[in-house]
Image (cartoon, helix red, strand yellow):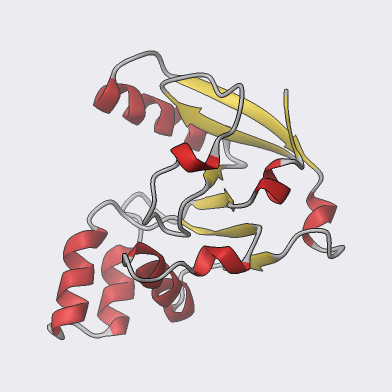
Length: 157
């Protein structure tokens, strides 16, 4: 399969420690199988940080997800299980991504911080939290590569 990473810089060497912590699935390298989605991310990164929109392409043998080579978790849709996982990974005290090499699932919207606060305070329940953190442009998916082992299976094109 071909996966894409949209940014304001070309990716020549993936360095996990440069990744921001407390993302949907934790600190890692995020990609999309949807070129248009990666192009949109590259444009957003450029608007925020300057530079030029660049999409870097990688090949990945998806059989590694099912043959036991990589520890893999998949969320095929928005669910309370997904919302709880995202919440815990975005909290400073939790690091669930260490259990998996690759995680696949929906993207949460950018307003998740406020919704996490409301859930913690008890002003909304998990069902309402799930509803509010769905990506406002419709369901879009991401691949998370969170270990050096997983990164070693990506080949830049």
